[in-house]
Image (tube, rainbow, N blue to C red; front, side, top):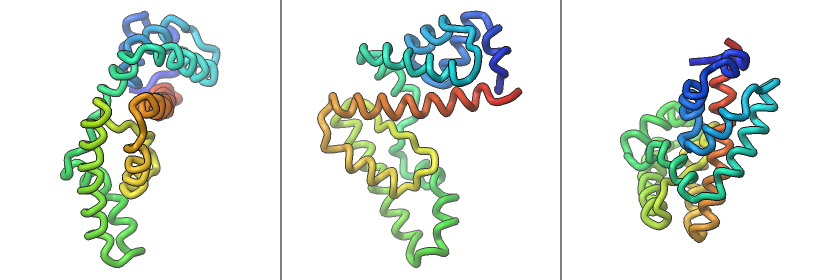
Length: 173
């Protein structure tokens, strides 16, 4: 569902919060942002979203609530489906790309499970435009971190995802 900014501003508190929870499942963030309406323009909304997310980050429970709103990337079949189009478009560029992609997919599934086991929450990354190999590289670079560092990294990535989702929610209706 796409709304104009004026439509969003006119929603009831409950409906605005419900719409916001489709962008980020942190109840604290959604309530804070819904309370901040009306917004003059998309930039004002995004600035308020950033501020609400900064406030929400002070409680680990808010972060974990937001992270729980993402499906875990760990099932090999779902990963293959997710990256199938990328794989097809890159197949002509590299010989043996399909075999390499299967290995990358398997490693990504295992890395996601290792990450969840270590940190207690799923690997969060702004995935738009990233290949499976790029995702794996990022995952492997972040896996050695401590939990506090990863909470901050995941929170930063969550905010990027949320901003994109807000823009999609409020695209011109």
